[in-house]
Length: 207
Image (tube, rainbow, N blue to C red; front, side, top):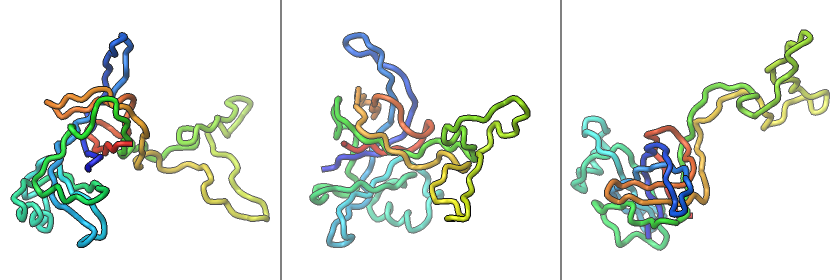
């Protein structure tokens, strides 16, 4: 049984519960995902469904990908992703649709996406370091500070918190609750925030 779906982050808003409490939610346009290829242990070594979403013109994809869509008489898709399936995927075939109906309100899901890229950042922004004194002629207001080691071991250990590239990495938010499902618009409203900017591709998987 499929327990995951890919979608696009739309934005955030708030809804009200039956008791009148305001709940911060993020709207995700989940699918519908079209099954493009069925993989099994006999031919590929594992069970999975290759799914596509987001239509794109044929001229914008290369010939190997175009051949996959032509073989199964499918429209070209902008994104191609895989969903692992436990116990085989024999009940699915190319052209089948996976939509929001695999979830129910109240389900807990894991949401995976690429976080916003922040570029090169210093230690204060990247690691929440405290700044140095701003008075009495201090020249170490936002500097990293001493990082070197003495004669032993005379090196900097791996993992040292230093300036560097911030964000733009895969982040998973665990145990997020589904607040509402709007099937007509393929929308899923999940409680809290979701990694990435508006329009980013995210994966929702049952926790």
